[in-house]
Image (cartoon, rainbow, N blue to C red; front, side, top):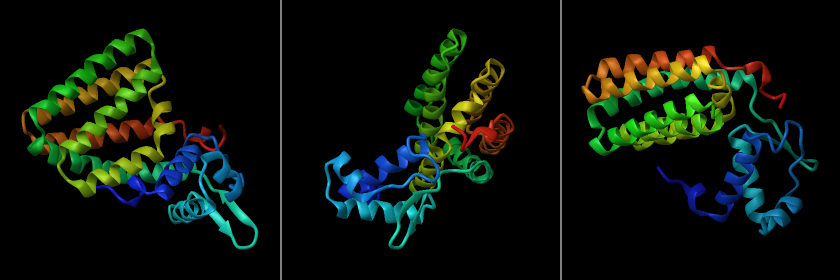
Length: 218
């Protein structure tokens, strides 16, 4: 589901700033100055101001009247809460995808898993993290619900750094790929109950391996 954030100038500024916060470019407590950001991005203060207001609505910054805008960032508790919500929503997405997934999407996910296994053996964790994310993104598309896809895509962005940490270890990476394979097999069999159950278990396992103590200390 596209929003104004996908097309407008303020939307582009919003995405740039949000990505900067989520990737650690802007740290908790940093001040975001309208003039400085405008110069960096080559835009006027108006779209920057609108973007900052949207970031405040999402809880990523605090705007203090007559003082400035300060980064809140994402806390360990925020990430934990998001994953608890993802357990239910991704389970639902897998259930819907088991009924609606196309053969093309199945083939694409199978390719993701083959590449994941290749990169795992090579110890290439950055590529593994990217493929892990792509698997979930394809599943969001396959579920056929624009609203669910929109919610999960946003949650996915918010916990991207934590998700990367969860597959740093060889043991977890191998297990994650195996869990994805089982989820995909359930989807291929059009087994909605099994797909939902396996996805919920997968997200729970991800939570168990998160290094939440590092969040906010990058």
